Length: 143
Image (tube, rainbow, N blue to C red; front, side, top):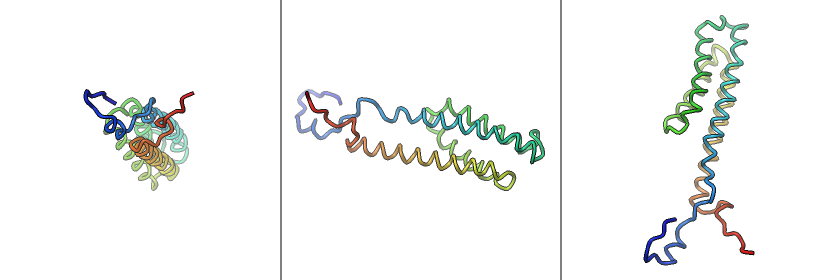
């Protein structure tokens, strides 16, 4: 909250004080950790492709390996506004592989649900922060 000369106490009462610790700061960390777990999970599908499919050097194998690498690279790019939509599009790409390898599609569905849940939580925290109802925004009793 910025101090303005001549500001009235009524003006200060109307503004919502931000929490001392930004709850949105950890969102990127949660997404990055989830991306790493997903990249590992997707890469673990490569032995299945080798055994049941045409091998790791097939188009499906290269595609799965490419998606796993892109997921790892996106961990470092989460500050960019376009990174999260790319993550969601990659989930749709995994789901689209249902015809070739249903296990990959299941991985896509599970992680898509996780990312959508994270986005819903972020929206809820932002709404509560704007309303000033987060526990960290409440006045602490003076002892």
